[in-house]
Image (cartoon, rainbow, N blue to C red; front, top):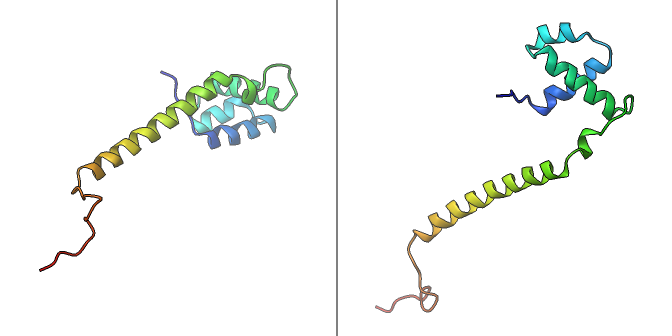
Length: 103
């Protein structure tokens, strides 16, 4: 299973790669495979316009849509859970529920 790195780590590593640091040195320092670093460098060069290819931010709108759907489904799950908590509470009749009792 591929390992996922935080976007910040990838961004900083790509900056260092584009600045000319050796892949082998970064792989040893960061514990990221050389193969992964070569892929990141290739994509960073494309994104910087220094190599032909599809830019990463425009590559797959379907992937972005799936990511957004996943976020919305997680948000909906939380809203449903919160709603269920409020539904379990005491029911108050909309008519007369807030009136003071005589007595």
